[in-house]
Image (cartoon, rainbow over all chains, first blue to last red; front, side):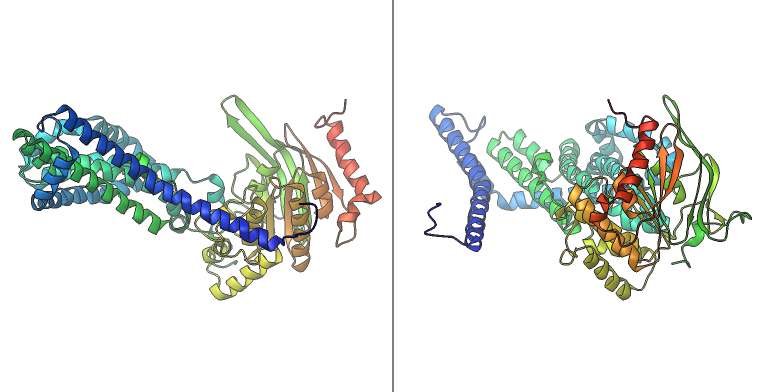
Length: 283
Length: 277
């Protein structure tokens, strides 16, 4: 290189490095997509092969092909049940936001209120929601209400806790800054404290959406006349294991879609934020 | 900026003895913190005065109470005894006639550089367009032209602190309070920012209270240097810096500059803040 015959300009080197970088990034993105899909496909194939080879009976452990076939054959039924469950989940989830966020604000603003409500809040969380589900059925019957309530009960706690943590984690210096600028308490909240709390609030919202799915399904288990959870019970009773699996697959997809929607809302609310994709936290 | 937001800064009583020239008067100020392991004597009956338009530095080691003194001067922390007066008015709540530069930049992650500067203007309900022109001018003056729309996460430490200086200046505050603003920066960035600060100061009439632990920074920037020693935080000496302005980096090697630095260093050696052996 020191012979000086071919001198490369810095611009050319820059161009080369840039191209390398883009190529690297593209292949990384491809890998992110391809490897999980490949692994999943390999596992499914293995499952299929093992089931067939050993002749595992369908009522015990159906093959992936049987599950897919059942899903396709029952798509109308599954879609109807999915709709019912989705409504329950979303009603419970929105209720938990509508009650959880204001409750968090109240806990943050009035320490006395916080002290009096906290033990109660912890107790409701320590109490297993599945245990109160039958009681809710006794009170509210087999309709929509008990499922929404269970989804709500299970989902609202992480929203409250995360919002409170986000609101109270503001650094002292930012408060000093606000005071020196003559910001009112309300404007400090609006311009500084609330945006500061958003990442934490969304962490709570993401945990809660997956919990709301669990809540609605538990509600349907205990006393339902519709929904994916109810369908699981029916399939179980009829020893229709492929349909049981199909229900689980659809529930999983539903959970993923709802989680992605919350993530999309997060991206919309905080476009400036670097974030780690939160799929890991979802379960 | 005097109008709407002065509510917190109330006039408790007129101090009759306030000298006409004195802008900031710190009178017998003490601060004691109560901690788990007992009390901490942060400030021990500190008194000082600052004239309008004067650049005063407080230099001292960590823990000598200099930052506490600044926070009390800003009305953000209460004193245990004694008082602070601005223009003869006793300070009893957060002052809003100031610009504060903190040790950390304290920028809001969700706002771009210029939006962070504009926060001050929004808080004070300044005219938006005029303020934005000023914000751009200020960012330009500290070498941040072209970075206006960058979020803090993509700015370096020095750049963030520059943005926070612009934020403290956009409303033309009569009093600028700086709490070790360059403490976390590398030596070259510090030198540049010190020069930038000197330039900005020369262009407007501002009274600046500057906290630092760097002797060179204090001597370079100040009209007067107040030397503090720790445990309890006390003023040891007040030194007038008689060097022509604008000051240049080369001046740091001049005999006068070296003499001033030596004087401060000797105080720290004599008080056991530093020991040679």
